[in-house]
Length: 225
Image 1 (cartoon, one colour):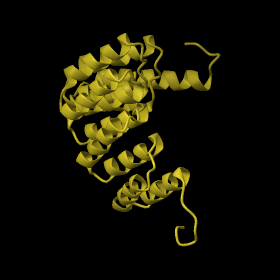
Image 2 (cartoon, one colour):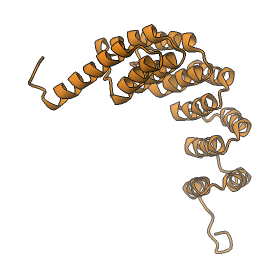
Image 3 (spheres, one colour):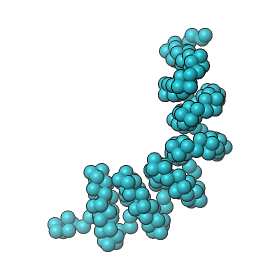
């Protein structure tokens, strides 16, 4: 573009960075980012979020954190997408200390965690066998007015069943209906498998019956048992 006498603008740079990231050329995207700075452009939220997402997906956690720090130092305010990308990636990598640290920075910046933020943290705590902390986080989530969805509760139910805490899993399952959260096939399958694994066949059959009843009512909504 320079050879032809045209100078790229911010829009052009952003979409070049995005294109390089989507094609897996994260190193080249970083090089283009450096070129942006040399040319006097101020990267915006789109640029930074694209780079952070690409670095996270390529397993470059430290580099993603460096980009976040650079973002803050250049007075470009991170948004929910920025923080959720980092938190989700750290939780997948079971780096819970760092994930919680980022969540604290998020709230310090005045950005309210959403259901995606909480789901990532709860999943990470379950992956690291911290069921009790995950339940505490669920309760904290509710107090903040962030409503859990079926994915939130399915993560917890699966973790509790895997660790043999069937009564607590069943309690969560019952709470789902009272809180207006749909119980899907994953919920039922997880509970049934958990009870069967622990040789509690009668309870597994009862849950299976409840599943059939729910499916029947969904197909025939005007028929009540």
